Length: 319
Image (cartoon, rainbow, N blue to C red; front, side, top):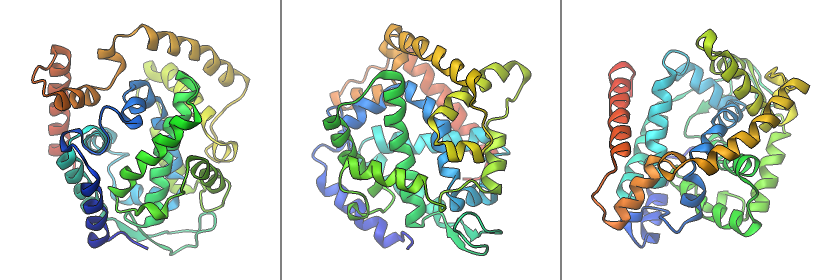
């Protein structure tokens, strides 16, 4: 099944009816989503989420054939997080605009798998708005956020994870996914992710392997130590089957490297001020809800750089 315009608008209308304060958007300062997603350290999970998404052959083939990821990776990164931050931390209208924009981009992305991958046959048609692919992308984002939080920042109580999961169903609705398509509870969601990770439908194929190799390749010799560490950190978060398919090394040296880095990351997180520990989009959301027009100098500088980056992307890459 594919999410069409009618299905998208139906879920967006349902979301709108459930919003009490449009300034707070779909979540707001009292939500578990803001409480957990505010930490910049969760970006450490971007590699895992990206590689898991590539393990769905629809996603990998769509990116290889329709995305500028391997030509201008910064373009996809900036555009993706511009929309995600609008959905999570923006007001209601920002979230809905980002949802419609994302659907519109996805609507133009379709094709067929050139070769068999896992349980998928060669010639299988794919679409970016296919429900199965959207559900998997959604699952990788939120499953990864909890795993990184618990690895780096500490465990989350089951009740918090349950509240978090019930809230993120609203995020799924921004992609036209009706709540009844999703597992009912956090334990059911976790079990579903584990089941899919063990199934042949989630498999690293040739397109995924090529894109992953590009993403994990250091751009310069000076960046090699950082990329070696990040590759090891990402490998730890991946299931062994996919890690082996990607040929990511994770022996004694890599495990020791990650283990040694975790106390450093935790200490840095405790020592940093909120202005560096939390995301600018989160702080902007807090100010908007409070009606505070004052923007701190650091956030003004960040917003200026972000606008420059977005403008550069819009000039150099297609929408």
